[in-house]
Structures are given as structure tokens and as C-alpha cells.
Length: 72
Image (tube, rainbow, N blue to C red; front, side, top):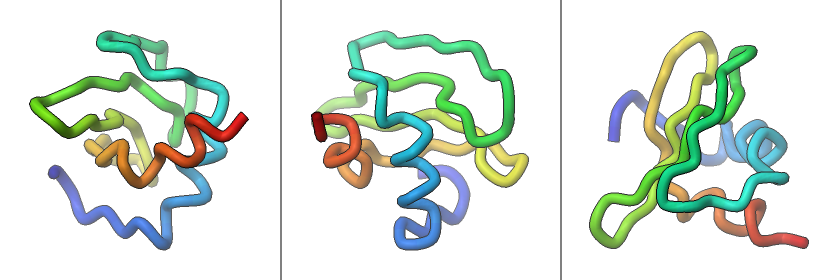
């Protein structure tokens, strides 16, 4: 995992960002502003979200975001 990801601090922001997206094996999205989802990808048994937050690009485990993605 790249960067120092604090789930409790970033959880709400990330949930709001990707709430409307359903992850697929390759889901490339154009980056328009900081905090916007770039892509969702899978590596072995764990999924990651590639996103910009606080001006930095990082990879975040999808397991933190799953409740937001599948909450509908």
C-alpha cells in the first residue's frame, strides 16, 4: 500500500467519491479534481482503489470501501 492511508480520516471522503461506481476488473475513469476516483483494480485476493486525495495519488484497499460501493 502506498502512502499513509488513515481509514478513519479518509473513509467518508472516499465513500462519497466512489459511492455510485460498481467496480469491474478494469474501470478507468478520467481524473477531473482532487479526491476523484481514478480506477479500481484487483491484485490477487485484494482489490484496490487508485485515487487522488490531498493532492497525492495513492492506492487504497477496497475492503474499506466495500460498504459504500455495494450500499444500494
